[in-house]
Length: 226
Image 1 (tube, rainbow, N blue to C red):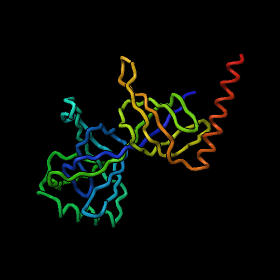
Image 2: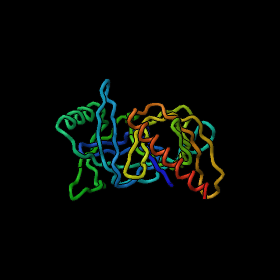
Image 3: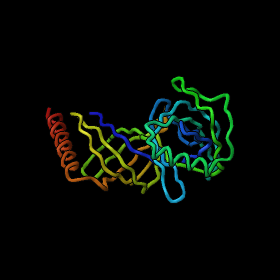
């Protein structure tokens, strides 16, 4: 029985330029065109929460890592969605305080016939937090934790919000702690076997998990007796 789940990462990204309609970012992870992401722009002591869909994305370069490896860098443009008047005001103030200059951009991306003509270059070093989901496959599971397989390496001791999709449209949400992370021996794709400890899971979610694990044990017992 295949069990899949999602974990949510928060990654710091560099703001390149911004308008009331959207934003251009540089990140070290690829963003999928058409996907919606949550974004938090830090503005002094406050945070501006935004949501947007990726309308274009491209590989724009690489950067060196401390161990002399390289990490790909991606540039992407997002269109903001469902901006309230409050968020529009906060965003307007942020642009006014952090912009370098404004200019007419003749090569802007058009969204549903709407053209964003004015973009503002942001002072170097301005960053935001981008939340994005990452899928994984469960290899082993118990009431205390699980062993998952992922395409991305995750540092040990990192804590992530996670969810499991179980049969019967059952969704279990919790926080997991990365207890171990080791590369697997597959030649066709670099994958990682990651041990996750359940560190924050409600009583009701744990009860549903226990019921599911009990069902797996019954199936395993029937198969072994055949």
